[in-house]
Image (spheres, rainbow, N blue to C red):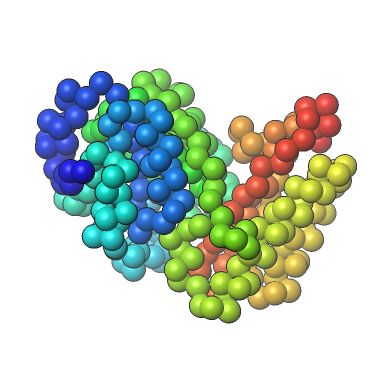
Length: 281
Ligand code: PAF
């Protein structure tokens, strides 16, 4: 496995590669990331993983400065799974102040975007830069960041980028908590409580599958349960899984998404609702 930090070196290394599969990350890798990397292997002879904490996608009061940097451990985990780790410096990726941005679709201002203004603009911009540098045929994005994945899918479709986006399933701990780099911020008591977010999403999904149609009431009940247990809820929302627009009558492909704070840690999660088209909302 090669570790490369400059754009030119990466381009030289990949020049002769017939098929490249790419997994962009911000490091602090856990089994969820490694599953995406294994999935990438099914789509490309050369698997490239980027490790880059992108300042553009963090707001002024967010955790950019304290985002965990575990580069050596990350590389050890990737040994045998990836051919190349691309780990540019901020100066290499942004040699001059970035003035050209990707304007993400309007839905990027809802859900997490409503609480993190500019976040998806920063994500879409760095991902487009990385796509232009790595030039993969396939890129794998985790469903854990469902809104991010759909924003990137829309960007690829509408800007006619020549690659396929593949979705990776969310990996969960035994109790159901979605694996996330931010779980490391939780105290032992918070960690025990954290699974409540997932349980509420499953509860909403099961209620819809069982015939529940008052989506707003289901969302309110989940918010109340979380708040009663000390959470500060940003949103719990049932959406069209493809467009992320609010769930409307007749739609069968749904996803329940949520973001909420446990102490100083913001957790996000989502659950796709599986029911047949004739039983749509
Ligand atoms: O999901 C992430 O880790 C980041 O948002 C990404 C896609 C690597 C862009 O910085």
